[in-house]
Image (cartoon, rainbow, N blue to C red; front, side, top):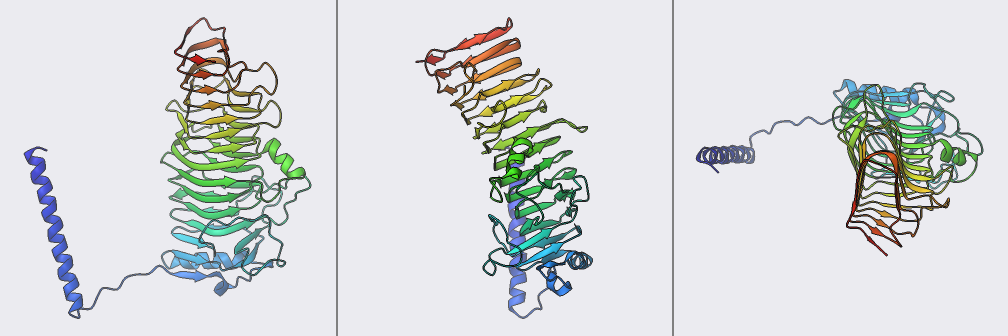
Length: 441
């Protein structure tokens, strides 16, 4: 450290000591009887005090909105909804600086909610029964969050949703707008569409469970880092019947448009047509960090229509695919220009192939494990028709065709991999393809 830096640090330490002395003097004054300063406390309102009933019969929309608006007028705070089944025939707007909180301090999960009776008291905690927007996929969302507003600790349930037919369309359950909107510890039990986390700054989605039927989470037009953590979509509401079958044919769990460094941690989905989908919108494409993610029994675990040039970095992931038309773990479509990298991830099936790769971008697999492809005989684990390809330090645990490089592959490096049986690589490219230091047997 130079002398100038040393003096600056010493001055800061001295300033800290002086600050501590002032604090100590303040504490001594308080001990001697000086009157302490008053601390402001954010207000908390109970929806029952504003007329909410919570019997799954009476419409509680107006009562909730009165409570939310009242707390906003007081400068922000919490609106508490105690245990109950609150019916909503209308929509809610959560004002800036206001939190709507239910009775759960952890994320709830159910296999179903049975109206106003038939369960132990408190078992369902705070449950919002939503009927607003039926049949209107593009209608007004149920909950709209704004700057520094949040929702936490409750279940959202659509009592008119059906299991024995095509699911009923509804608008988004939660829409996040403004700056720093947040959703914590919420169960989206059976919505048609879950969370629209687009057009905001620094959204925070954490500890979410449930079974969105058409779309789970949508991210787009994010220019300041968004966070999605501990989100698990499982078929707890219904795992059989026409509704679930429709979900496996049409459902998309996580969809990403433009996002500048989206951070996604510990997320999972089961039984969707597409687990993680990356698209280009009018604002651009996604780049971000995806750690510890999973997709089970999805026809396409990962589908990339477009990615940003900075890259999708996917690590410590697990994917399976074995149902539907041409089950495939990863598909990168021909329009992709960006970068997609998989690291330390596991892929198994039985699927037709691990990956189908197109486009003019770069796709990489490093330290990955590939198992159980070739459900349809003759398919290679990785099939690249174009673009650039990196496969390094991976293990192919089947004695089946391993890699196919099409004639439009621009460049490829296949290095340091382990192959079960003889190495089976078919190369039709006339460009620069480097294959070396692999071990087979």
